Length: 391
Ligand SMILES: C[S@@+](CC[C@H](N)C(=O)[O-])C[C@H]1O[C@@H](n2cnc3c(N)ncnc32)[C@H](O)[C@@H]1O
Ligand SMILES: [Zn+2]
Image 1 (cartoon, rainbow, N blue to C red):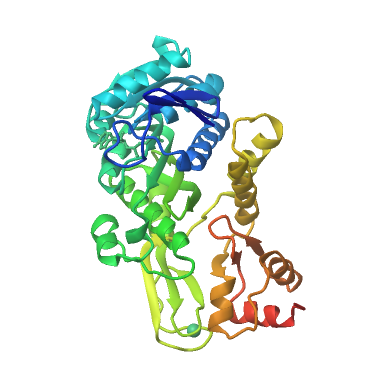
Image 2 (image 1 turned 180 degrees about the horizontal axis):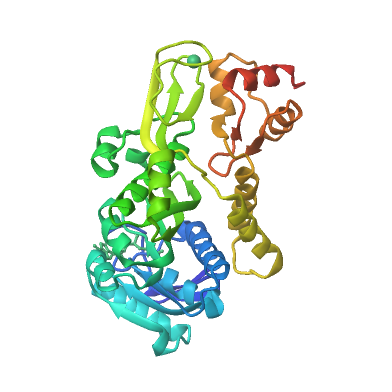
């Protein structure tokens, strides 16, 4: 919801109200605010709340490392109740900090609960070494250069959320850039957001390992303009080794038949059609994409208490909960399957999900694409079930 107030625009988002300069949303704006990122903020704050409750953390310490208008930090303060005690709002841009100051007043936030910092986010994170219960990294473009310092900032048990808006490298349009930034090869295919998220998660895991901290992803989500990974951080070397050695690998896609598989090693031959035209994306995270218990707790919050989520976010959280149940499933776009296997029509997503379940496979819709499914079935099995379905 927004209304114009002369030289600024007043926006209500969740329980917070902010005033931001009027104008287009672009990098050169005085103070950046993008209403299209609301869903990202809704889910970031809700997952922090679930984490803080799960670990019984009261008066938690939060760093909003790229604050801009302060909307995220304000929402942590207003929506996490007694679980958040203080937020540090950091931004390099002095105009952003003026805006944060104004918005703190607008929301009646007590001075003792907010601190302003004007540092490069890396410096801010090093200053707050081992102190932060929640760190929110939401830069322009790639977050890759901030992850080392984030590892330093995290408390013994804490939550890190990272946004990447450089979806083109991560999702395979620019694989060379992806390699440079994330030390992994990306690949463009119909389920590319999943591979992009898994590459981002693996990158954070590897960087954190150097700092002897385990980063365990609990929700990976996104839209075409951003990817976001939220994970629990623990200072626990055994977990570091378990995560690193056992659950980093590759997502391999057969260019001949479209089959795909997650494995520890690269695949050279397709198990469905025998083709050697197989492309490997990675190293990436092959473990849980969405933690079922965590997603359930988020969904329970919608039913019980949280009235501050947008309708779109509620829909996405319900989809995340469905998707989390399909533990070993991968994403397939029904339009891609239809074209590749020369089906007459793409099957309707909801009906295909039900039909796959009737045939003993795990399947669900996915929040990443309305025309896609997540399933444990192989591509030839998806095709077989689709052919049996009555149109
Ligand atoms: C994408 S915006 C943040 C949006 C905000 N988190 C939100 O949800 O509306 C990125 C912000 O980071 C700031 N910034 C850019 N580089 C920075 C750096 N190295 N350290 C700290 N802040 C930085 C910019 O001034 C800008 O306000
Ligand atoms: Zn194949």
